[in-house]
Image (cartoon, rainbow, N blue to C red; front, side, top):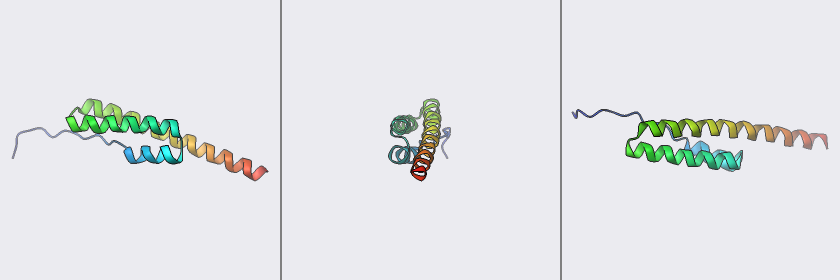
Length: 83
């Protein structure tokens, strides 16, 4: 058994970022993809602090993008129902 420390791998949320880009909010989705890639790259080189920060930012952008997308869908459906 090796004496090396195990490092925590931060999630990248790349799948969620791609979904948000395609279905919810394009600008926030693209920003989330960039942060997701930064998290993956930081995980690959072992920089857990940078990976954690990029992962947290990607998650926040994805949540905001999803909420904006849902609100936009509700507005569009409401406007269609009124017409």
